[in-house]
Image (tube, rainbow, N blue to C red; front, side, top):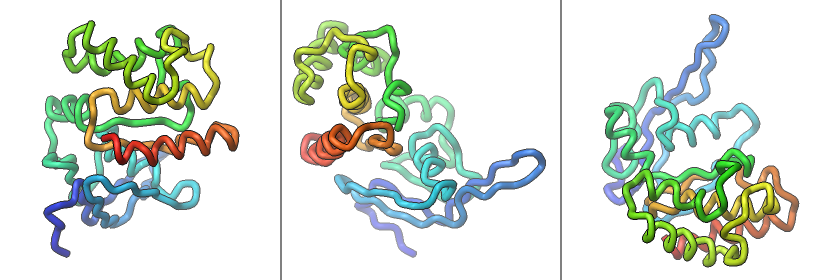
Length: 200
């Protein structure tokens, strides 16, 4: 199969094997996938089918056992540790299912969203303004200084999305981002994720 030169993500014959209690567990078996720049993709499957494993590999949080995976210009199978740090900082944003896992509990919303910009070297004044603008664009203008426990689950997830896109990464991953939310909040978060296609 010939790779599409316009694809942002290319997976070829991707395998991930875990060893647990002396047994090999195959989480991914020969996965082939291409995702174009700007494309929104939902990965569906039963529990234990490898969805979260794939997202963790795409996020640079885990490495595949074999195969080929490229995101942008980076080969994630053969990436150096230093390149992997830069990839996680600048090239990918991640939203977890549980809102609290995304946020530092003792930081305000604006401080949480400023954090990845600080790590990327953005100056304090600029990152606070950018974080505030981003949160306001997501409907949280009156809640910039609230800590996560002072926000609803849907609001926490909007802060988490702002945090994930703070450095304008070309790839945004979300692992069941509405799984812990009520129906109304879940619909709101899903609409927000769809609208990001036009913002990023």
